[in-house]
Image (cartoon, rainbow, N blue to C red):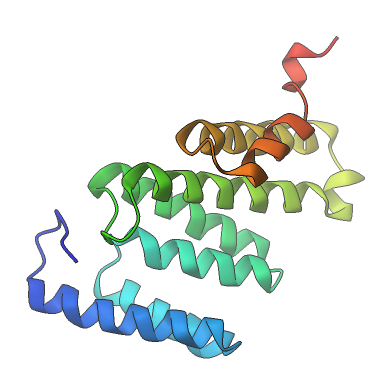
Length: 162
């Protein structure tokens, strides 16, 4: 695994091993362990996008939407700054996954009662941003049927509606 970061390869290899252990823990349903390992990686090197993405997914799956959103946004920042860390998946695909992840988090936030029954502008802004990220994911990875469905399902942006 290579990286444009100014981190020694030995450290990246060490973090890669921890990342693979975190993914295995997540797959085995040991979410607390996976979360702690991902946080360990990010304490050592916060510029790696993929650990932010995996942490965002765990936080989303455990209904901690606000911290999930922060991690997904940070993943996109780091992808823009340094690109993907892992070579196994292409850059456009990693970007698509990150956009789709953020879109899903925003969509889920818009489903919360305090948003639905709160300020209509907040609800609309969340849906608009979610739609935007699903559409970006669809454009980056046209084979992503989930993003394509939601980009269309959420309809046109609110400013386009009469």
